[in-house]
Amino acid sequence: MADIDPAAYSGVHTGTLCEGEWVSLTDTKGHRKSLLLEAGKTFHTTKGGLLHDDIIGRPEGVVVTTVGGLQYLVFRPLLNEFMVSMPREAAVIYPKDAAQILMRADIFPGARVLEAGVGSGALSLALLRAIGPTGRLHSYERRSEFADVARANVEQFVGGPHPSWTLTLGDLADVVADEPIDRAILDMLAPWDCLEAVAAVLEPGGILCCYVATTTQMGRVMDTVRAHGGFIEPVASEVMVRDWHAEGLAIRPGHATTAHTGFLVMTRRMAPGVTAPLRKRRPAPGAYGPDYAGPIPRNVRAEHLAANRTRAEELG
Image (cartoon, rainbow, N blue to C red; front, side, top):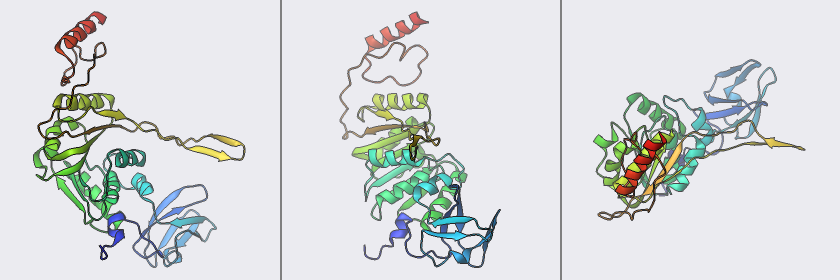
C-alpha cells in the first residue's frame, strides 16, 4: 500500500499547480472556466489575456488578473464540479443522486461493483473514489461513443487509466463477467431485462440500485423485482436540492433549485434458494387492470387481481 499513488485512484492532487493539470477559474460573477495548464500559453478573455505561466508553480487558492483587470480565483476542480461540466454524449447522474447512491448502496473501500450504463462516466468517477485502491469497478456500456467519452473523462480527471476500472463494450445480459460482485448499479432504459444476469453474480446481502428517469420505468422495475422473488421488497425515492441565498436580512430560497432528475430503486439480494417473504398487500384500484402488461408481483393474490381488474373496468 505504501507504493500506491493516491491521485491515481482519487483524482485528487495536492501541492503547487503543475503544467498538464486542469484548473478551475472563477470570476467575480461566479462564472467558471476550465483550463489545461500549458507553459507559454495564454488564456484569452474579453478583458485581455491571462498567462498560464502566472498560474503554474503557484498554490491553489490564488487570485490571478488578466491584463484588462478581470480577476479569477484558481483552484483544482472538485469532483462534483467536474461531473456537471465535463464533456458528455449521454446525460450524467448528477452529484445529488450519486451521493445518495454511494450512501444507500453502501459503497465501501474494497467493494466489487458492477455498473451498467456508463453514460459519460460521472457515476464511474464517484464509485471509483469510494471503492479505493482495493476495490474493483466493472462497467458495461452498449454504445461505443458513450464508452469513449466516459473513458476520456475518467482519464482526464485522474490523470490516466484508472487501475481499479474495467470498461466492457456490450449488453450486460450478454457479456456480464462470471465473477461475484457486492453491489450493482443499473442506469439504463430497461434494467428489468438484466435482473436475472445481475442476480446470478450478486452476493447474498448485496445491493442492487436502479436509476431510472420516469415513473413507468420505476413501476416496471419494482414489479419485476417483486415477481423475481430473490430480492427483498424494493424501495423507490427521488432527491431534490434547493440552494439558499443569505445576505444580511435578505434570506430566501435561491434560484438554482435542482428538482427531479431520476428515481432510485433499491433492493437487496436474498441467499441462494431463499425466496423473500410476501408482503401482504391489496393492490390499489386499477393497479393491475386490463391495460397493465408487466409482471404480476407474487404478493398479488389471484382473487385480488381479478377484483382489481373488474374494478378498473367499472371505473372505465
